[in-house]
Image 1: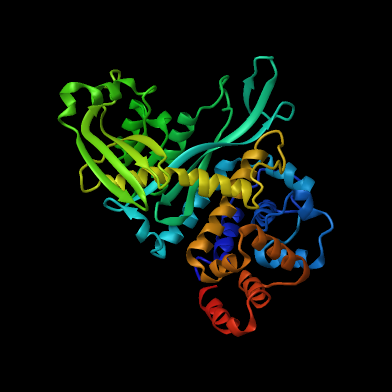
Image 2: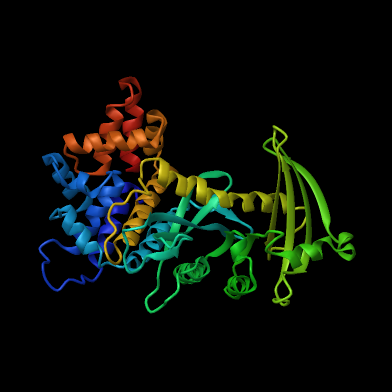
Length: 438
């Protein structure tokens, strides 16, 4: 199976082998072995580098070599010191490499909307904060009591769809102190770097970009439209006063349209109008405005407001409101999963003096992408999650098996887990299916 663990990890190994080694000496353990070891740690959700390094059993050593192609296993200290010098920039293209494999298998047809756009949700997240630990790329914030807080964050871009639980990270851009700059980095700067990279890596793919009100400004919208992509961005009355004033102006009230509909038990009422100015300072930027009031089954009411460059009509307003609300999947299905379902996203695996914190965060996101592809395409993996009830339980069982038995592939590991989880009366069809998909 071209989307199975074995094939995707082999792709990662090939990518790592082609990364130039920055070291001038002490190359007994290759850079590829270092990167594969870190990826193994995140694939099996070890809580720390030390947990992977110290007290390893013989089976773990054998499995690290057979499943991840590692020739020499580094110590946790060597791993930290080496990866601290590796910029996350060398890993960004690997997300595109894996994503293209998913597209090549036609797994994203049901994700396509509005003339083959893919919905790309973007949001920022902080994963490290300290008053004492810092590196040269830390963001810095001075508190009222003059204490300084050092932090790391990243801006993620994830393909989502309201009808699918799986999300596919296209990559992430560190929000970090930039070389030669005296000021902190900003999400808008990170977004430009990330967008440009995504558009260059996927030149024939059209994206419908979702984002919060921070991105709904003239320069960012022009940037999206210049590359012929679409957007569906949140706006707020306090940050977009001109836009809301135009909507509420008496001369426009006869122009907007109104529709009521019900989706999954929610009563929804929408108003929309096309071709309003975004603000006074960007008069050339015209947007289509959508306001939606939602009443859930308990009577709770919520109001959402968005702008888009897709002409709004009574025929597409329902879909637009669903797609816009899918932005929460980057928080719920991505960041919250990384924080609460065994990935230990906010755990400090190592901070270093340069790139370590950011590089490890990108490698963790890469492991998450591979897991999401399994959840999307591997029926055996899906069945194991169903039987184990939670991802955390599955990771625990995978680590336990990893420690006590030698495996020559992830196919072998899945067969073992199935055999020791599912009753024998149901194993025949499952194992038969494994042979066809792994």
